[in-house]
Length: 64
Image (tube, rainbow, N blue to C red; front, side, top):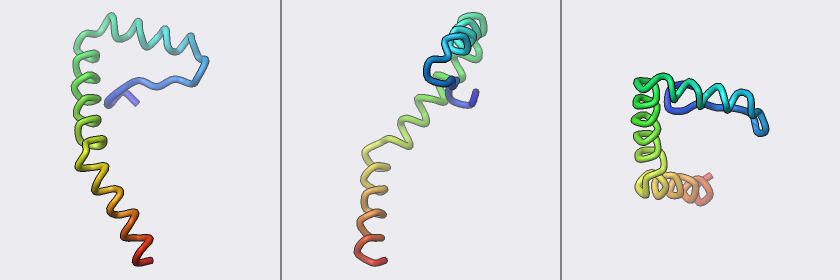
């Protein structure tokens, strides 16, 4: 939380509104969260990361 995004429970409109207000009022936080979120998406969800994860799964099934 607050490293690469802000979280809230499904249906928790009050917390969502607080997060939106925070991001509107704090450009530095908005910039940092955007940068860290993009970096996470580019590394954790890249094609290479997904292929590597699938290979690990397949190898664990072949060689338990």
